[in-house]
Image 1 (cartoon, rainbow, N blue to C red):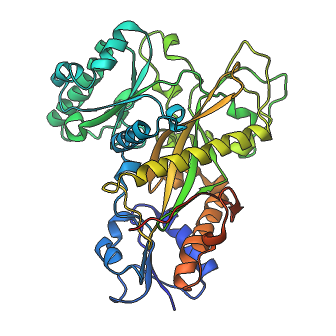
Image 2: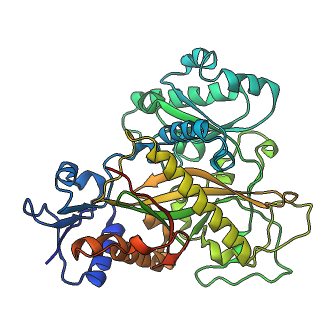
Length: 441
């Protein structure tokens, strides 16, 4: 009988999905919330902090882990930026050149350090800020759920952002009872002196836009053509990616579209302070909206493309979904290829697998024959799957069952891995294989 250690203290939905998947795929498995006896063959399908990583590394033949021990160059924004930059230096023709926004990395604790930083790491950015009106996005390297994200287009605005973060930190020190639950941008402020690492990315000014109300949810009625208005919303795609062993990579073919809570406005159109709700598509910041902003990408087929008001309205088609999915496969493959060249910060183990939530933005050019361009935004470990909502819980159930079939069952049953004869680009269990490498661990 196989044993599985399942512990997810802060993610009860993940816990239940794993237990359901194991009971369906491995009905004889014994599920426990404690460490099995030493030297016993078992699976640790738990949150990162609950896994005995030393045991996983020492007993590779008998212990399977649901997380790699070292994968910072994927899940930390500043490490990912560094990883991709290094890869592009050696492979300048890689498609990542067009699928990763132009990015700068900085390390800062206090706003008065910016003068020195602009004279060094951000010298090139400083020249560009003086010469053009391009917008940029500031992101903390290790924050999540949309915290600390800000837009700016000049040096003074960037200094103001860091001053805001510093003032917020001072306010918290003065009022230790403050819970931080404020409205607007303040609710996403961060403490610079604690985070320190930030990335600055070029703002993508031509995102693909839809009106999610064209795909009604939870019993709402689809508007008639006469009722439709040209109200466009920004969104990003959340794809679930499964890495197994050392190394096979899969893309789950049920991809989510997560919409902003307010209609899109280019930053130039904001009259006073930028309303981040037009740009932030993170569901963590919109928990009060429930499932209102969550769709499957396939559900958008037939919706009007609202990205360019001047062009004749066209509708999103099945071939568009196929094109975007294909680009995502290639971007993921290249990104993990880049990570494999950083053996300090990514060490795939043959007795591990991991689920990642990968965020993409699709830009739209009406005049370019390659109409859609997929842009990688970030990769998340232990993604907040509970924010998908009850309506689409079934895609999560199928995802975890697929992981049990492809990653866990071959280990517990000591059988040959299905991936050994699984061609790249082929989908099984709704997982599309996009990379297969034999990496010495």
